[in-house]
Image (cartoon, rainbow, N blue to C red; front, side, top):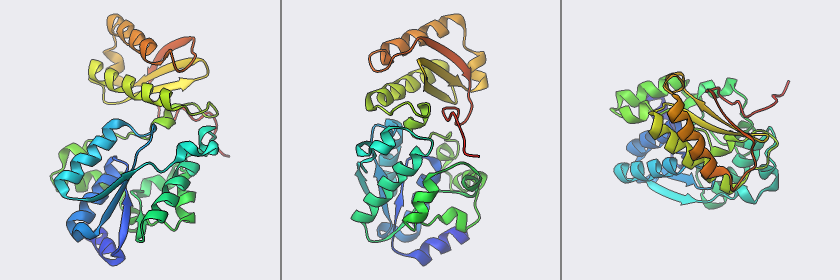
Length: 263
């Protein structure tokens, strides 16, 4: 962690893109505690951002006394993003970093960690084009290292926070992104998580189908009555915004809405 603090101190003037996930939130906490109000934070809101993530950012901003700005970065005005290509994240991050650069003078920082470099992340190209720096990568810190640091700092709730990418990641590649569908997805996931005490819930929109992905324990607890309740819930929340013929349940699989990967 000393190496990370040293990097932040060396950069001096910066703005952190805070999504509300563990990586960028912890980076913002450490930056705020290291440099105080001179560390600026930016959180983008849009239909793709779960309400829980924005609420989490607000809560940490209050408790940690952040210099926080919340605004819409405008990706839903970008037709390239709405069409939901395999590199959708590139257009999201392009809009995000372009907006931040237009509003702030400091160096843009992200919560990207070492593990992210081996994953398919088109947003990293946008980061490179906007000269975004990744302090975790520079300090050699992985996802496990981030959770370890959070525990060391007494941030147990943050350390245990499961991964939660943007809501657009629930929509199968090439199916256009729709704001109302994403809001319905968010409501469904919150309700299913409460109903089943699930660790992971993903409501996937596929071609004329809805698939609810669950962690193994929650899937094992899915009895016939709760299954019927959840099917009814999904139908009530999403039937008005998308057409589907089936609702199914499956084990959680990271990134399963991507139908093709680059060779």
